[in-house]
Structures are given as C-alpha cells and as structure tokens.
Image 1 (cartoon, protein in one colour):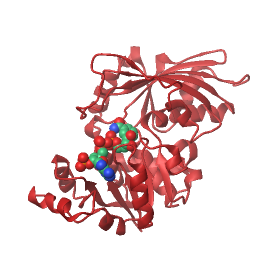
Image 2 (cartoon, helix red, strand yellow):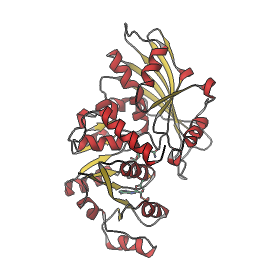
Image 3 (cartoon, protein in one colour):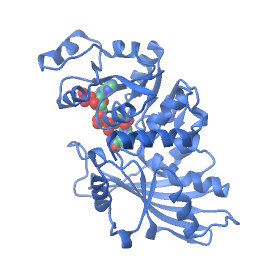
Image 4 (cartoon, protein in one colour):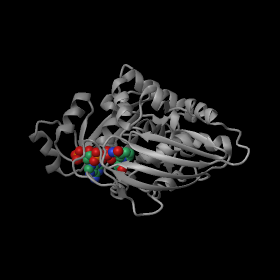
Length: 345
Ligand SMILES: NC(=O)c1ccc[n+]([C@@H]2O[C@H](COP(=O)([O-])OP(=O)(O)OC[C@H]3O[C@@H](n4cnc5c(N)ncnc54)[C@H](OP(=O)(O)O)[C@@H]3O)[C@@H](O)[C@H]2O)c1
C-alpha cells in the first residue's frame, strides 16, 4: 500500500521533498500547497501534483483559478486524504500548523526551522531512525545539524565518546532569496554557543558538542570547520577516518589538490555536472586533504548544500513514522537508489 504524502509549503524544501517522495515506489504525493498563485504553481502542475491552498478560506482558494491554476481545495481537504503531512512552511510557523495537523489527526514532519520542543522528537537517518518508529510527529533537523550528524555519528559509534567544537560558516541566503543578507559583511552570530552544534544532541545526546556561527555573503553552501576530541585508545588514523566516511551513506570524499575542488564553487559545479536537479548535492562533502588526526584531536572541513541534504532524510523519516522500514541503512539505500533512477543518474 502506498503511503499518501501531503506537502504543506511548496517552496525551496517542499518542491524538493515532493520530487524525492514521487521517486519512491512505496509512497505518493497526494497534494502540495501554495499560499496563493505564483510561478511555483506551474511547477506543481507540470509535475502532476494536485495543488491546494495553504488556507481554507474561499476567496484565497478561488484566487488560483483567476490566475489560471486549478486548485483542489484548502489545507483541510488535503489533510483529509493524506497519511502524513510534510510541513515545509517558513520556520517558526510550526505551532499554528501543528494545531491543524492534530485537529486532522494526521502524522506530521516539520523541518529544522522549528525547535525540537515543538514535537519533542527530532530525526536524522543515521542517528536515530529507530527512535522514530511509529511516532506521530517529528522534526527533520536543519541542514547544518544533518551535516554534522552524518560525519560525527559514525565517529561516535566507533569511539564510544566524542567532544566536538565547530564553527559554522553559513551562507547568507538561498540563491532564490532576495530578502536576506549580509551582502558585504561577515556577521558573527552573537548567541554563543550557536544552536547548531547543541542541536545534534537532539538526535544523538551522547555527543558533547558546541558551535560558533558566522554568516558570510555567499548563497551556495555552508562550510563547517570541526575539531573533535577522540578518547584514548580510539585506534584510528587519518586514513581510517577517511575510509570510515567513504563507507558512510550520503558522505562524499574528494581531494582539493587531486580533484581540483578547493572551494564551494567547484563543489557546486561538480553537483551540476553530475546532473542533479537544481544542482543539488544530497551528500555532505568532505575535503580529503582537509582532514588531519593529530593524536586524539581530529580536524576537518565539510561543506553542506543547505537546500538539499535534508531532502532524502524526509523520505526516511516517513518510513520510520509509518513503521514500514526499521533498518535505517535499508531505508537510505532504497531512498537514494529511487532518487538516482528518477533523475536518470
Ligand atoms: N532553505 C534551506 O536552505 C533550508 C534547509 C534546511 C531546512 N530548511 C527549513 O525548511 C523549512 C522551509 O524552508 P524553505 O527554505 O523551503 O522556505 P521557503 O522557500 O520560503 O518556502 C516556504 C513555503 O511555505 C509556504 N508557506 C508560507 N506560509 C505558510 C504557512 N502558514 N503554512 C504552510 N506553508 C506556508 C510558502 O508559500 P508560497 O510559495 O505560496 O509563498 C512557500 O511555498 C523551514 O523550516 C526552514 O528552516 C530550509
């Protein structure tokens, strides 16, 4: 039986999650919402995703037809035909939307713009898939927290303990966003520590981690500079850490010198070259020559494609919540193979 998935908010994250769900053979998109007519409605129509209005009032629903789009109804109509809703609304709208999902009695997944407390349950595929089996509500953590989890969880699982300090060098805005900045400054986040590192502990509480963050004038990726202290007797070398990550799903290791990928610009060019839609990179990119284990202290850099690393995690989270796949590695393999086939890669 196919899981019926609604997407509430068909923006940067919503349109990508819709494609990733559409790629799977065990789930289907039953509808996506927009607040009103705009060019994104044309994308939904082109993909064959039924279009609904974010709100239930008749005036807003009829405004779609005035602009030539076919709207099937309001959010309540969509929630009534779905098994699970993926909330992809802008951050901090969660409380209002949660009340609607609870009233409709539907399972719900929020994104990283919401706080852990909203659902009391956070998710990344590699860290805590099993904790989310059968739950009614969860939050797929942010792009930064997802990226940190991808490389830190396997390290933690090898070592049994881990203390981490990291600095998030954050993109100022998404490429399609004309409202945010800075465009000519470096802006330290003056809430210390920043929320990014500690947020890892919502999915893997055993990792001791703190972070600082700065926003820089770029739109294409975040970079993390990470220092991890491993316990005595860890038995690792720089090469064996790299080998561990090579065997970790959704992590790519490439060389700055050998592959001539020395900045995020080349990482994104490589993602476009390999044919990912929107130039996405679901994997976390680690520079081979930026990794160094010095005694018990590990240094590394990684780059995060903020618009897309969380996308396959939403698919795995659906399977956890619907209790259809208990093994996170099996879900990840199924999700990623289906996405590759969907895009003909
Ligand atoms: N962008 C990233 O890099 C990124 C990465 C990871 C996680 N996230 C998180 O993902 C979530 C969505 O972010 P985004 O970047 O996709 O935002 P976005 O591009 O601004 O898209 C938000 C979408 O939600 C719709 N919307 C507005 N108000 C709504 C409401 N009350 N209920 C439902 N939908 C509503 C908007 O509709 P219209 O199109 O009609 O205006 C738009 O389609 C946030 O929690 C964010 O923190 C974002």
